Length: 91
Image 1 (cartoon, rainbow, N blue to C red):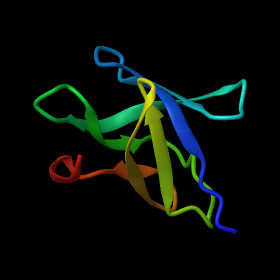
Image 2 (cartoon, one colour; image 1 turned 180 degrees about the vertical axis):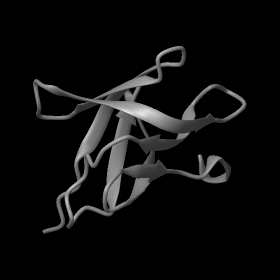
Image 3 (cartoon, one colour; image 1 turned 60 degrees about the vertical axis):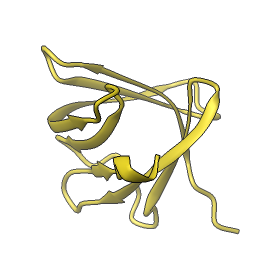
Image 4 (tube, helix red, strand yellow; image 1 turned 45 degrees about the vertical axis):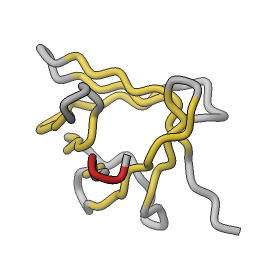
């Protein structure tokens, strides 16, 4: 079975570029700095380049359950940092 972690909350403070990700089934949050980020016209985060690695070697995607509904997940890449990307066109 292919288990993918599910993001339930994303908090981005644009001034400090602090990012907090909350995952389903975990009481602790993942904190990082956004080296770069992009939002769509509605203000939804569609791209994050984080200052460190937050995904595991076997993970290629984070699913998203945000605002009480399923949304398009983030594809993952990176060896030293994590890059999260999702296309605004498929939302």
